[in-house]
Image (cartoon, rainbow, N blue to C red; front, top):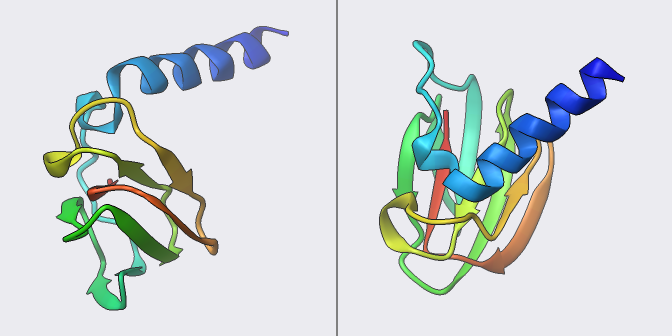
Length: 96
């Protein structure tokens, strides 16, 4: 039960603060993050999507967070787990 509460707490904190508020890790994600057809090898940080609809293919070992605002600010619109792909509304993508 404690583990479940810890996971829910982290999820709620992330949802309220947004991914830009999370502490950065020392290493970049391993793999390739493809945003609107543009590959980013071993990505880390915030990437603009140059539009209001973003297609994300996440071939990394990290979760990618899609923000409706430029600069990865605000509550995220959604996320793409490692190995996943999605198209959604968004103006930037954050990965740590």
